[in-house]
Length: 333
Image (cartoon, rainbow, N blue to C red):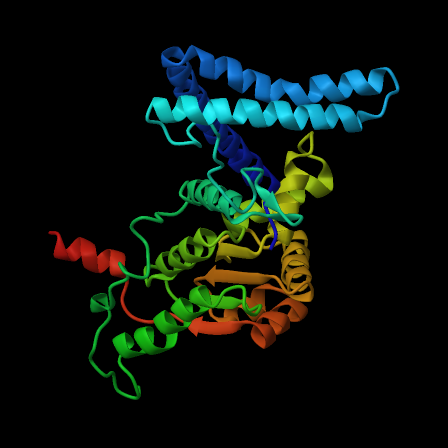
């Protein structure tokens, strides 16, 4: 699983802020108890300092720390007994002074066995969805809110299925399965069809599902992506931000490239698209390309190598029907 460094930094910031808030509340709780039981504060402080004080003293003079450790054990047992007695007298549980980690798996470090723990992954997923929400309506555009009622159920002459049947069986089900099975096997999609047929809605639904499980998702328009590649190549922006953007595009778990074909097609754009498609296929990273162009029109605009890789490696999902935005506008008149 790949992580976007920019988003992970935000996730770590929120993770540490929440950790500090929990520690602050725990300290406030401890101080409230100590204010009622001053001797408890003294005993607790002695328990925390005894080991370092005795062993440091033994090592400082070059003596065997064994006897010191034995003294420590006896002193600790006495202090523990007094602590338990004082807590019992106050009607408090034995562990009320201890700071319990919110995550028992990693002890609130965020990492377990050299991997990102699921607690930190949850923070990452939230921050990533905030990022995606800048361009997508993740709340309004989900699989649950995708309505097939906007597609005609009438069978057109020469067609074996109505637009509604095609969109449900061929497109919606494929996108839903793709999202739910993401991570089990690599795969890429080409969503193509006229404007207003639901490509962005289903792209957002997939992004919501996949990012919610902690996978890194980058959603951007083709024009802006190619601009970032161009700025990196020709040094039009100073600093490392543009290089970081290109790295995210190439290395994220899922790239959603929207509106391919609306950009000005230049030799550089053709080269950049091939680099994106080829690199991500070679590294088995998933990509979704959304376009108003048919595969035939793509072949006329981009290099044969690029289109061949898309047609040969991607699942092609044609969107059909009438422009939903126009249908909604007509209905609201």
